[in-house]
Amino acid sequence: MPVGKTARERQIPLHDEAAEALRVVLGLRAKVADRMLPDERTGDLVRFVFVWRGKLMSGRHLFGAPLKRVCAATGLVDARDRPTVTMHRFRHTLGTELAERGAKLHTIMSVLGHESPQMTMVYARISDAEVLRDYQSVLEPGVMIAGAGAEVIRSGNLGESAVDWLRSNFLKTALELGHCLRLPSEGPCECDLYLSCSRFVTTPCYAPRLRERRRLELSLADDARARSWSREVERHCAVARRVEQLLTDLGEELE
Image 1 (cartoon, rainbow, N blue to C red):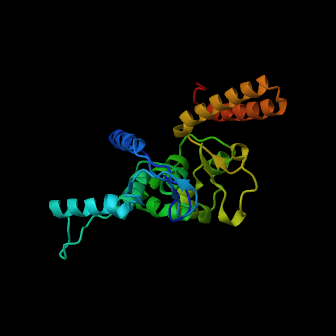
Image 2: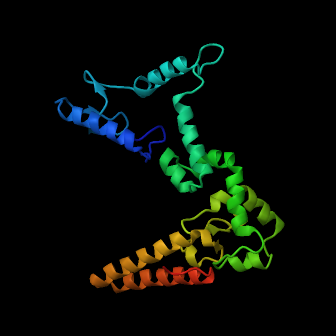
Image 3: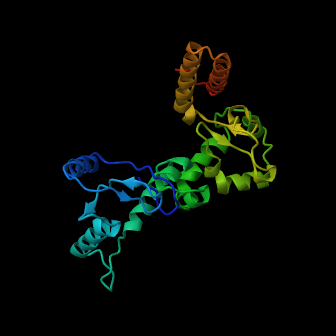
């Protein structure tokens, strides 16, 4: 989607019915010869889809007005006959649904066009039960875990203040393949090598992603080998071996 109020492009899931309806509109637009209009933020000339008599249709005209009519027809209005469902409510509903169904922080940020995790954490807080379940899957006694940070948990060396912080901020620690247990008092992480970081921990629920990452690294190593990029081969193979070790520590199959 085009940039919004945060000047970031948005990625949205598109239902099959919506995609088909959009194809129909695009087909109709392809038959019309009209001038391109400048994007109000970037200044680039764009051939917009929803245009009427040379002017760009607003979101309120396309969605807000029809939604208002539907609310009136179905009785979804307050005592002053104002709609109880608004365009922005759909956005918040989407964010909440994504959080409660286990979507990762960066996924929600991408879909909603958020610039910072703090903006997205509004939805994560709504999903306390989901966050608690994810937290318990890593930090509860007896859970199978792996990674350099696993021993700290097993030995009970996480202090009370550290555990309290993790309880309230656990979703922020989510990474692609596990969680980072680095605490605010330790300052920002100096590298992205979290697979071998002493603060990294992962669980069996990440096994499918770990296997996918292993396959990707092996594929990239093969590609680098074909191009005679020896250092790239070494790098990708090293990551693949580390992922294999994590899977082994978790008692999971490599494939």
